[in-house]
Amino acid sequence: MTEAVLVVGSANADLVVATDRRPAGGETVLGGDTQILPGGKGANTAVAAARLGADVALIGAVGDDAHGRLLLDSLRGSGVGTDRVRVVDRPTGAAYITVTPDGENSILVSPGANHALAPADAADPAGAKVLVASLEVPLDVVEHAIACAARAGVRTVLNLSPTAKLSEETLRHLDVLVVNEHEAAWLLGTDGDGSGDGDGSGGSDGSGGHDSHNSDAASLLDLGPDAVVITRGPEGALVATRGEQADIDHVEVSSPQVTAVDTTGAGDAFTGALVTWLASGATVADAARRAVDVAAVSVTKRGAQPSYPLLDELS
Image (cartoon, rainbow, N blue to C red; front, side, top):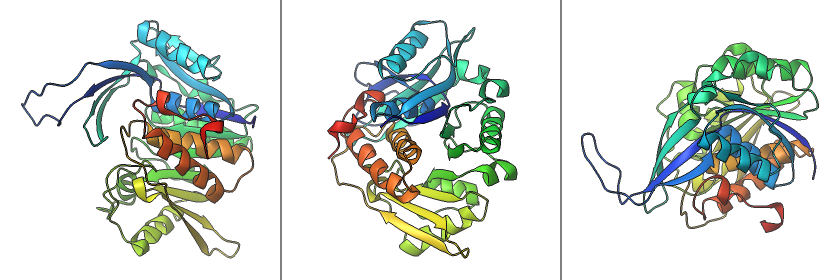
């Protein structure tokens, strides 16, 4: 499978510490040794897609430092094009991650070089079939990239993570909006029913009802995107699209049940797989089915990019 995917997003060094529990405010808790791994939502998405055989390039920025070199080496080693990754005079972005024995994580991101990206960096989607963006880079960069891609006839996908207020125009330009349950609730201004981690793979149980999720998906479609994917952790994902007569088609995608070791980057694995199969011509529902399988595999290993499967590792 060789398709053209263009990723607009972050590249971070993940500083990961295993701990029995997360510290409360004002508390010190001892953890394990620090691991420094390549990460960032943009880089993770690009690597996940490349490991599945997609032809991928990343638009991003790193610093001229050891973390930046780690990221560039990881991207290139996975087959991701880095010609549009700028090296800038700011420290490479970093994510400080704690992982508890149940595989759950808490993450604090310091954007660093990621915030040096400018709209002009993402103005040209030439050659891409699918453009996918996430929001650890400046919002104006993402919105400009999506607008340029839509005008060029390139399919557009946005992973609304971390959450940010999008313009109505950007939402209308989206072919696919990807959110977890918390992000969906945030975007709709509701409390939300689900308690899953929303990475499409393993993590805490999603407790929202069938009708509630369908209603949320319909409300998200009303904001403008052509399709919505709500990831629901170990419950899989819900795909909603509009039919020919404005009817809404809902497809529930179940996830393989696995024992989660580390959920870090599983949502990015899902998104990378989703755009890989979208670029190959799959429907959103079929792409989501493959993406759920990829995310499930990723949570059975530690780290983000090191946990992503190759195509021949999937059943």
